[in-house]
Length: 302
Image (tube, rainbow, N blue to C red; front, side, top):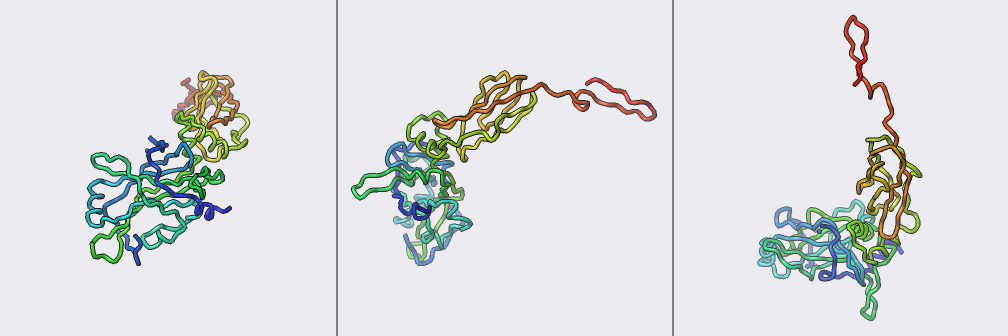
């Protein structure tokens, strides 16, 4: 099934109360786009629902005073989020003229999160497939690692008698896949089976380092390469007296010897041998040369 047809088969809903954060995060004839405030701001990242129907959601903030200004002019103003696979969107630019016609899911916000003093926020989610009996199936596994482009919008009549809607878009669209967000949550210590089911399905048996072994000098650094389909891994070393590794997979040689570097995503892991050698002695590294005009060269130990 192609992505376009699959997207059209997904049920859309605004899921809020039972969603766990994954990051520290009206039709008109012809619409016209306003480039000035109010500006919608999408929260960085996305989050995942830990129960059926599993799904991914995006949260958008709007300043309370701007929201009240819009609603004061048009009580039927529409706030929502458009979600479309990145590869289907391609180079298309979403505008006030085409946002109702492009092949994106248009999720109208019906769930507003608790307000802060200055900000209102709403959540829009791409959820599981709805069955005829009202139950839901999981988000389709073949869709887990598809990058989803999400951009929030507001459509309203700037004046009571306006014949065209003003449409504004968030200036910071978000692009994430369900699998990537699940791997970020796992990297932060979340252990829910929903998450491992997502990442295990995407990784299969292919997770491995690109090289069979790595070698570097003491004090040098090396970027390991993990074939993990773009998901977020956590890294560790068997012996930190030989090498350390940060959470981007960058290894630093500490002392001569051999150790193993391990990368982990949910239930999957990969290991690679790392050998650290003493710094090689070279003329450039161990000494300096002073040349005096008319005199012979002298070598000074550094």
